[in-house]
Length: 113
Length: 113
Image (cartoon, rainbow over all chains, first blue to last red; front, side):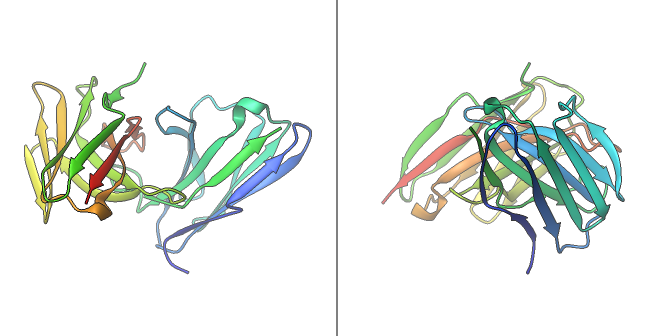
């Protein structure tokens, strides 16, 4: 596997479910990110991890809970989501903090019913 | 308030002609700019970038121009090819030690054979 991978690619869940999104990067990067892309809106940065430490939380509701066990893996734990949380969730990685180019995974298309 | 704007949601160009995609920004602290290309069902892929110390960066058929006084950047693709049909996002960052990238809403380019 190369690049940034995300699983699952598609997810349908009810508002009372608990699910997790997984991201893995094979690029040797030290920074990882979660973005949300809703229809007709720009990508919204949700969380940033540098060397496994969370350095950014863009006022994301607590029903989204990130976890970064190591520099290669990033999870987004979901619970009691709302229908408006339906979106494409993209993971990205970069070498480290700063202006380095970010490399994106294919995304998880989430539908909350 | 959106700090990076792409005012044209779509653009159609004949194969072989030039495609010009535009992006405007409001934050004068941005010092690094990127263009990403996104095919359906895939994550954005990095295309080309430019630092604020330059006004032009060229890579093959792709050239990015930066006009700092107008807070405007553009991506030129010449000659355009059908495989260039995708959604193009511009992004900007203040750089330094921060990781905050700000994205536009994207422009969908269609290259007509």
